[in-house]
Length: 388
Ligand SMILES: NC(=O)c1ccc[n+]([C@@H]2O[C@H](COP(=O)([O-])OP(=O)(O)OC[C@H]3O[C@@H](n4cnc5c(N)ncnc54)[C@H](O)[C@@H]3O)[C@@H](O)[C@H]2O)c1
Image (cartoon, rainbow, N blue to C red; front, side, top):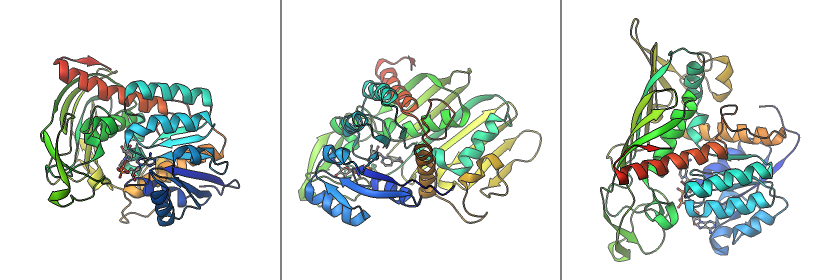
């Protein structure tokens, strides 16, 4: 990346599991100052600011947003807070980088997408798998017609961190996570990736949603994502209404068909996102847990396994790979690639359009993903296909 003459100040609201990864990623860019942290209390904000090396700490997001040294607001709170934080930041004319989902409901996401257009600032949602070099390689190959016309997309996003009834996250509480758990939390990544990689849109869905663990033991004190359970005395039993497993048939706007499963109760699958796109000439498959390899399936010659290697991938996407072949790049590197693109836009004074012109997800695209998730829930509830 070119050296930036202008420095930019960022502030982050919510520093639990993913927040520190936002900070690590922007720190690597070299021209972003980690100005401030807002947490749920003064004590926690102060502690978190110390942990991540931010200059200031605030007990509420309003104070962080009002800080003139903060030009870019990152949002990494539970989903229910995305709407109020983002809306307030846009009202102050700040650039916003929100973690996914954009908001807890499709209606809120829609409103944020409209507010963002009026605010004329850079807005982005961290559907971070877009930042993987081989995802961009696959996208580029598909755009160039190398696999022919896509006619079938399939895959899954499976995890196992909610398989025990003692596992608990705010994602299981509709007041904090929204009306969906597995679909909104990780199915959303699959839908975004399928659309981004192919340029297609999911138009119709037929969903089957299940709550495999309908009663869970919730800790009386809050726990951040992926933290282990507390002792039995600190737990209360609660009913769970949101799905922890869902399978979906999908139709795309070019007539292609597809299916995927999102589940957080599948033992052995840690962060197992798989997407395969089958076209009229070839198939292409990317798996997050083996993200330095891209499988290309062929009918009339041998299949290929392309290793992530800057010298072997297309020149147009080479900027997403930073290490030579055999030097594995990973989740955090892809996250940093996304931040490089977003901050590059901000530094260059550009404004993102919705659609395929930039690699990072716009609010418009993220709002559409919220809508897909709600359409799946609608479909599952009413036992019929739903239009997105
Ligand atoms: N892109 C990804 O791959 C990815 C991965 C994980 C999480 N996420 C998303 O990031 C967001 C955060 O998820 P997480 O896993 O880090 O959750 P988490 O529970 O680990 O962290 C959330 C943090 O927000 C803080 N918080 C709560 N109320 C607050 C308030 N009023 N003001 C400021 N901070 C407050 C909590 O104390 C906690 O530290 C969610 O929207 C989630 O969907 C995205």
